[in-house]
Length: 360
Image 1 (cartoon, rainbow, N blue to C red):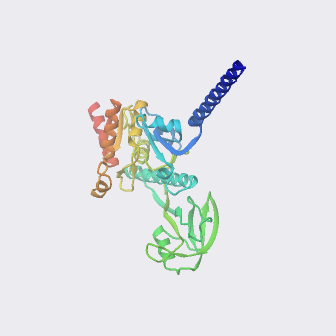
Image 2 (image 1 turned 180 degrees about the vertical axis):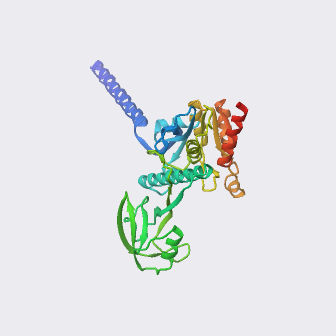
Image 3 (image 1 turned 30 degrees about the vertical axis):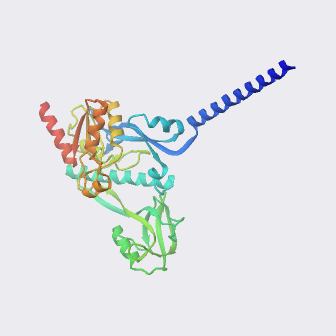
């Protein structure tokens, strides 16, 4: 009898151990597979712009490369979140930090807008530098956000382009806003807009804007413009979003427009926004971009030498310029890649010209 009781206890313990082992396997599998509301930013990819850009249908066949660098973003699991804490050049960010108050779709639409805007600015700068004629054409008001109290919420979406208000067209977003603000709060307005390339209309009452107490339709907006020129520049960026490829787009387009051998066979990458004055602007995640460039064998990396204002210092006393961040990343990597500071596109062109003279 005692033997049977003892055997029964042993069998029970064995069953408990098996159950615990099974639960541990399930928990471990969940930690690896089940996503959590956090994202990991890590080194992404280095993309040769010869593969994305053509001028008048012709590809760049010269040796060397101008490449954009990207930050990779993926949703975290418990396992990858813990791993990111000990992995170099990886950051764990919350969904709020990444998306703000935007939905996934709104975030993607904004990133695509920033990419389109970056391409326009790059083409404009390259055209100016190459002395090619062009015209900036106003297409309408690009919708960046829609307030929840707007009568147009759920009708107009982020990514749409408003082309008319009450049947009237405008030459800029300033003209559009001036017209709307001249109307009365509560007044009905009909807007015409493009949604996924199709023209639609929506009507709603104007609301009182918090900023100036005047009438508005309750959308965040910017100019939607496109470059018009006899020289056709095509950029096939696919699903890549954001504004940070502006500088590198400009250099690749300029190379193709002029036929100059800027690269001298070297592998050149970099990052930085570009504006209508040719100023290279600050971007996020530059350490990860340096890491992916180094892994791809890049020889020269252009980094924004942006201005750090007193206000920025007040908010974050530890803030550094993108160039300083890039230099620190390069030191950590112990790379031979040359980090070059640039404030403008012309700085990058001057550096490349200097390299050409040194090699002559």
